[in-house]
Image 1 (cartoon, rainbow, N blue to C red):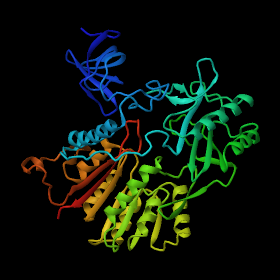
Image 2: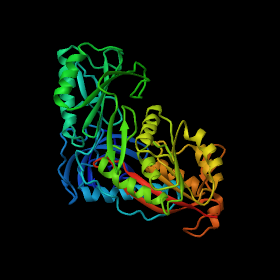
Image 3: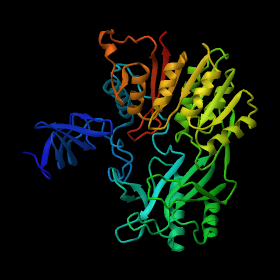
Image 4: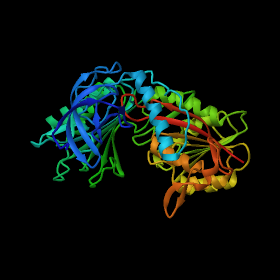
Length: 475
């Protein structure tokens, strides 16, 4: 009988969707991080429950050819880059497999998924830093990333997937907090001040936000001077959040220094963003993805396009230059304001920005706009497309849809509903019995069929993958 703390020597069978090694041993499936398929490893059993177990690798006895030396000193301690030990071409292949498996297991869709589009920068690609600040066991301030499945902060001075400016910023905030006696936030005792550092680089300029449990911090002029010395153009916000929550930002922002917003240019579009405006974190892959997304909704220039979950409006504006008219629907007020500013600056009279929930605003647009030239593109959050929106899409008879997703699991669920493979019964999603007699690859009338799918590596070294899916309605 296998028990906790046992040491097992065996061969890894596969790699899971979260980047962990999958090892089947004596009827138990173990999940062991940092193990690659075909490797002989020795691992320590951490937990066993039924036929599922978890372990920690102690030694890789026979490394796989695809194994590389990880660049990060806190690899496996930090909960971020779980694929650094896998060479980059194999990461791309693995992520294609993750998407394919999710579609098959969740939606019953057997679709060939092409190789994931690479990032030209596998490291140092992120334009946004979001890092917790807290206290260690001795009560001292610590800045770092959360360990996997916990709020225990692993201290870091730099991060391999962030550019060098992030290292400079961490050092500056650490110096400010040390010299001005500003404490990190203690979640257990609800004491201290700074909870997170959030920063974004836009066109060589920087927006820095300190999320704090107190409305005021001492000696901010000292922090501002250090930021100005390190960065050519910088804006500083304080965000007040004293709630017992995992949500990073509170509702109250205070502009301490700078303009508050910065402007940049991409694909001939002038755009601006603030501290909470959504922008993809990898500009290189974002450019590739948006170019391809544009092709899916723009053919002869006579289309009417709805861009749902449109963020700061960059993609909406790119679409506006190619089609008859376009609507952007976005919940976040700041992002919607940025999209409206973008519309004015770029003189896009055929672009309309709507602020609100997609599930509330989309039906009115669908009632107004109909016809064979209507197209819809959706870029939802990780939770996927709201069930009410999916229902509206099935009733709308829009000829073509494009979905941009950052979560293969919720993407598969949404595609299952749109293709009719999954239906709702008593509040639960179940397999559609109507498909029992349908030939492999065929689609029921009134639903959508997948015409194209392509993953993009927006997040190298991590388990995450972005995917574009095109769908056509089967009349």
